Amino acid sequence: MTGLRVIVDQLLSPIPGGIGRYATELTNALVGTAPAGRGVVGVVSRTDAAGVARVRAAVPGLADVDVLPHSRRALTLAWQFGSVSLAALPRGAATHGTSQFTPLTRRRGGTTVVTIHDAVPWTHPETLTRFGAQWHRAMGERAERWADAVVVPTQAVADELGRFLRLGERVRVIGGAPSSALALGGPADAEERAARLGLPPAYVLAVGTLEPRKGLDALIAAMAHPAAPPLPLVVAGPPGWGDVDLAAFAAEAGLPAERLRILGRIDDADLAVAYARASAFCMPSRAEGFGLPVIEAMRLGTPVVHSDVPALVEVAGGAGIAVPLAPTEAYPARLAFALAEAVEPDRGTGLRAAGAARAGAFSWTASAEAVWALHASLG
Image (cartoon, rainbow, N blue to C red):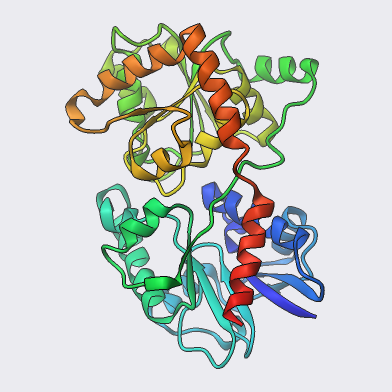
């Protein structure tokens, strides 16, 4: 059986984040749509039996899990500088990277596809760690030289990367979709989850890893603005880098502590309830490559407000309220007015209907079929 080797190392991360969700959903869909005679092999850095079990639990249909002999840290540096273990690149294999953590060098047969999720390391390097920005740019240069194809989630990312990398016709736009696990149980289950999470009767929701580019400082300032709806702000997502202190943002903006509820990282069933019960969802990011939470909120019937970064505008497709980032000093005020609009009954009803229709355009099955077609075109 000819296998497609998929790099799923992000599944082993303590905080898998958006890329971990992407890798899980896409790989499961690749398994489910595999052509006859094709299997999917997961590839991870050095790990133990428990790590392999985690990968198999996340993607139960894998034909095999290939554990490389080196740690993620070692591979991060080795792949950046082109020292690629032959164990990662068997002769004639087709390799699909679900991120830039992908071995890119001259091949002796076989093909390599890499995924670049956003252009942030080039357009907003100040929102990343110095090492992170440098590493992603270096891997972008390796993709420019050695990748057989580059997958990006939106045309916006393709256009932005075109300013920095010469990728030509190798770029393919293949987006993501909401997880099938992001679903509501029965009313009693939803009530129990809402009570356990301490969800208020009405609130504005934000979802994502806590890091500087997510714009949560602006959203908190918006919620403290007189024009904002007098609702609590609920934030769901794991801590990231940059020491983002939401309580400090609230104190600085004058948002009372009782109007800020920080959930941290929660599971999909809890997240579905948080989305469905929110009066509005806001994604105030200063830079994004796709913005999956926008589609997740729309699918679960929540009015959406988002910044006007190109990827979010593209993904939302006019089904949300887009708020201009510039001029930056008045951005929180504009968010406040947009949120007040979104929670108005008539406007909210229209946004829910438009969002549900828009969310229906995204499917992991379609994404996986596009990936299989891409690899077939590479031979």
